[in-house]
Structures are given as C-alpha cells and as structure tokens.
Length: 199
Image (cartoon, rainbow, N blue to C red; front, side):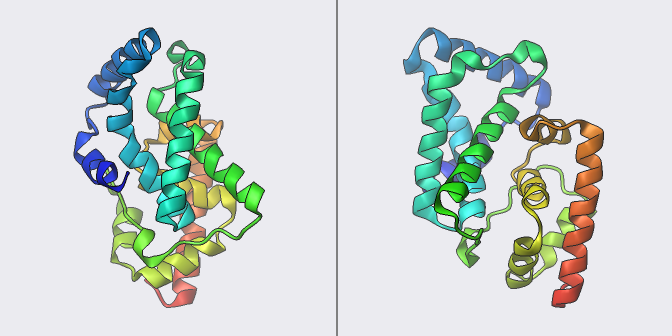
C-alpha cells in the first residue's frame, strides 16, 4: 500500500474535465466487470491511504482502513450516481472519511498524528497551505489536535487535494457553508499556532 501511495501522487490527473471523463469511464468498466476495478484502485489508493494515515498516524491502520474503503467501494459502486453532480473522487473520499470516523467511534480513542504520518499533497496551494508547509511539524500536530472534528476534517481533505466542491460533496454541506467553516478552521488553526509559538 505504501508503494501505491507514493506512486499515486503522479497518477492523479490534475485536469478536472479529463479526470471526470476518466472517472466515468473507469466506473462504467468496473460496473460491467469487477476485474476492471484495478485502474480505480491504482489511481486513488495512494490519496486514500495518505488521508487515512494523516487521520490515524498509524501506517498499518491506514492500510487496513484503505482496504476497507475499497471493499466498500466495490460493494457499493452501483450506488454511485454521477448524474446528481457528484464526482467519483468526492464520493470515494466521503467513504474514506466515514471509515476513519467509524474507526474512531469504535475504538473511542483520541485522534493522534505521528511525526512520520504527515504527507501533504497540495494541488493548489493558497496562502494558508503555504504557511502550513513552513511550520514545524510538532506545532502543527498540536494545533490540529485542538481543532474540532469538522475543522480538522476540512483541513485534512483540503490537504488531500480535494477541491472546494469535492469537500462540500464529501461532507454533505453546501459550498457557502464549507467556505465559512473553512475560514473558521484556518482562523482557529492560525490562532492555535500563534499560541504554540508557530507563525
């Protein structure tokens, strides 16, 4: 899985229109024949693994959660409805987000990140993301742990490379609500970082 995670960085198509066409073709092929699911896995296993790793801080657990996500996707692929305006990528990350959330509910453990578990994939860095890259990991780790679940999820999905629309779809909220929540999440993160001696 870790090798797929590294390879997945270059596999993601950054052209949104081409990506949607490719996603639709891959989903149609996988629906027709489960043996054709491999391209979906090869394209998205890395990003899903990295999101799970950031959320858990445990490489083995991230492997397990990634496997669970893709088993769920195989079982529920027929339920994906692109005609409702959702991208496959946001649908997939919603499943991954739910798998992580379910894990934490079951284990009733506190969300932790490990120093070796933070691998940022930033497709379109803005000022806040650039500032995040400059921070020492320990300060960032402490600040992320202080955010509420919704704020942490927004930042993790943004750092996973999802667009605003994809994050809103994955979280089941409107784009204006997401933008407002994202602004508050970054403000809280910045406040915690300032308090920790960050920025």
